[in-house]
Image (cartoon, rainbow, N blue to C red):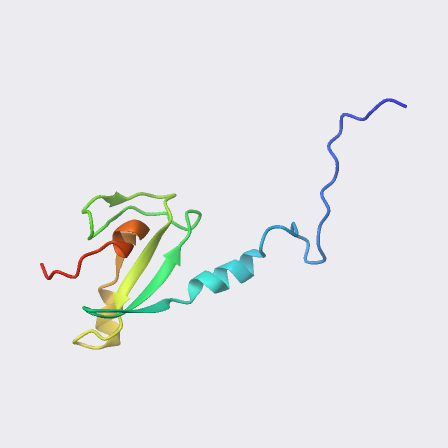
Length: 108
């Protein structure tokens, strides 16, 4: 009997997606919760933005270069801002992940 040129069907889990990939809702919920980091310059909330969700151009305050669409990065805001939590959230910044990890704590 000759072989078929049709690709095999992928096995799916009960949720309807590929078993190897996490469900999009679960992944979105996991990444949507900011992590709290303590540093010499204060308490920070750090949220990861995936390459898929990065859709605008921002300027990284660490290297002053563009964070272009399609590049995974982090959004950071100060939780213990002088004028309250809302002020800290309004002044959030998009950083390259590496720039955030290797930042210096010098005041500019």
